Image 1 (cartoon, rainbow, N blue to C red):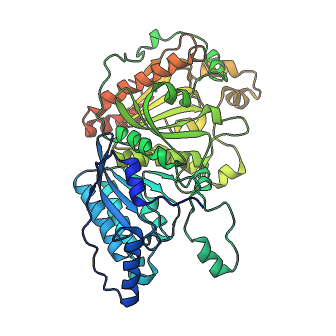
Image 2: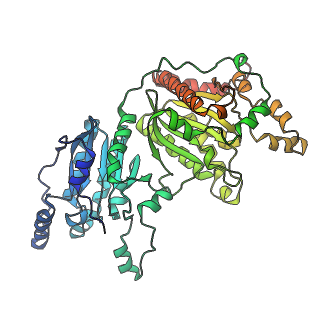
Image 3: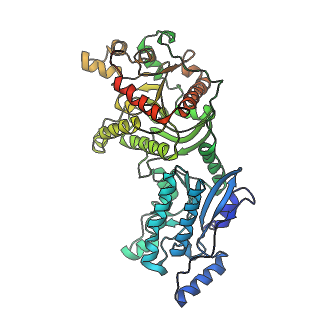
Length: 500
């Protein structure tokens, strides 16, 4: 087994050299009996620390961050009354000083020597972390090997972003306890960082050497001010200035395999990004992507449909929409704008999707998005088919790529309903007003991002153009009065389609 990362090694690896300042005072006296006192003294001698956690403040590339790090060498990183009090005091101080918080647990869980009193300490830790998040301050968790028990089931699972050490044992019930209770080994490969990342429980697996860069990118998104980029011109805002091409042509161009999607947008237009994964609740849909990102001086939470992860056999399911709602919660908690990218050939039509609540999730997305307090921008990047597209639409500002489109069904589906065949799809596309020119005329979108002549022919420049348009809209929205902006959004969708 590889050597475990100590608390001091973690701090030295992540923070700027010499920047760490301890917040710790002498641990609370828990009045241990003679045997427990001897165990505490032995643990201190072995680990070189006076409790199972170290707390303090330091900087990463000059930006301040509060730190809580477990020390496994001190009684397996277990949490008792004194350790819990140290954690809570650190979280509360970080909240008062408006500092983002980096926590790195490695623990066997509750300290058995203190029993139930130690067990219930997780409640007050969870409460303190929740208050910190309610103050719209970032909380990043890095799980070290191992993290189990009440620690994982409380402050280890509340991060806005959660990563883990490669190969780390991460789970609720430790395998040794499981075997003692049930007289059989816990199934292999379940309680691993890699498996939990794949299943959407945590966001990713990052080696210690990469944590500093991860924290740096997150702090950039959270702390750098939004600046309007004057060089980013507005999208086309007059329908007459959008090329008058057949709707079916746009549909076919939007389906080109070479057409750039959300991944190209991040690659070519984002100055910083922190990729996330899954709902945090055991679901991960590979047809969507979520990230913290920064475009030309504007930070945001980015969520969108990933065309590279979709096919006729793999379309977005209810889990994708639950990931969208996670992105909405993140934007609200972090007080960051939300950017949504629509690029879907349609939601999943299957028994599983129906039974897992696809339609209710579309409804919840619509309700959450249209009432979200933070600024929102939606981008119709390509195909916009059905409820899966509509769920990401109702934003403060809606942009559309020149060959993007929005329809209740793919034109072939509309043709099948009206004409009982699919051969009338081009006529249905024209009649339904699905193309960018029509959407701009009807007030569904606010601007059209040009393609010269097709995004697939200029993927890099197109992605940069989209990023610039998004940044400009974010810069304007962030500067608006929140109450007025919110009222305008509701009024917009209240009046959409009515005579002007």
